[in-house]
Length: 370
Image 1 (cartoon, rainbow, N blue to C red):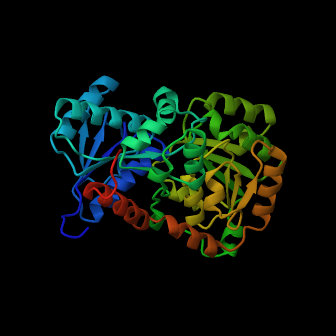
Image 2: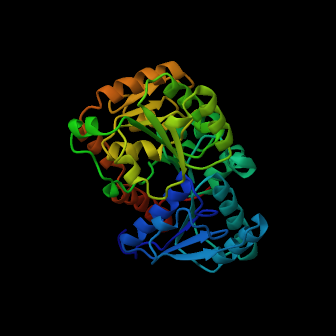
Image 3: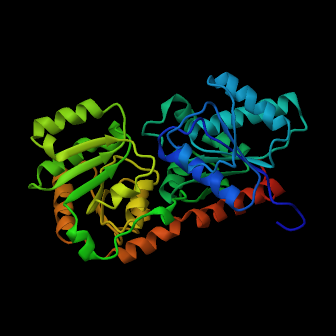
């Protein structure tokens, strides 16, 4: 950014609870700090699940648990010149940051801190009221913000074509994944030597459709077994289904793992069974670990896997097709090398560079809200 100091950046996410968008917020804030930027992280309240992904040098400011309190506090920080640009992570954060900007300008008309928004999942999957409102108000929000990021091209299309977001202000930047922390398999022989463990990961919630994955695993002969990392409201139902299917002794639900790399290093295959994914952090993590990936064709994974070049894409909700693909991957896991090379596209430093180019332009006024 010529003749101008690098932008001071603030990131806003409601909390660093367990989830892909929350992890992305921590990774991005840390990445900005690693590039020498002055970085602040605003949260409504402190949470531990993804705190390990945050550089301790990043200042964390709690705003208040209630929506009203957090918006008012954020507005005060915007009016006090807290940063040169503020990035919101996730639908609820987008809505609240835009509200805080409007409130700050109403109280202090000279407030000119630009904001950038980011969407991390589709409107039809577990958004909550504020998240849904962020889609309903997309025509306004994407015009008020200096820029809006979607984590995949499929999510850009969803936001622009279905919710009338301002196409000229919406860009696709994938999530940053710390692939350098992976413990990748070196060869197909190494994968074949592992126990026939199918790994999956995600919140134990309806949109992840782990029920279909359980039904797929039930079609596979022992000793194939399934490990699902994550926590959520569907745990009792999934445990009951595993019991009903007669595979309870072949299914493990060890809970949420902030650092999943050791689990990838013990698996032979990775499976994703979601109904919808804006991106799919876990798909990149699996590729970085050298694992063959079997994923439902649910949005973001198609882009990560380059239309099936780096993994198998199966119809959503089809347990029989999923089982057949898992059986093939267990039998012939393939060469980890190309998968690891593909995962490098999503390495933290590369994605952070894409974000910094956008945020620096926003701070410099190269992109302006209407």
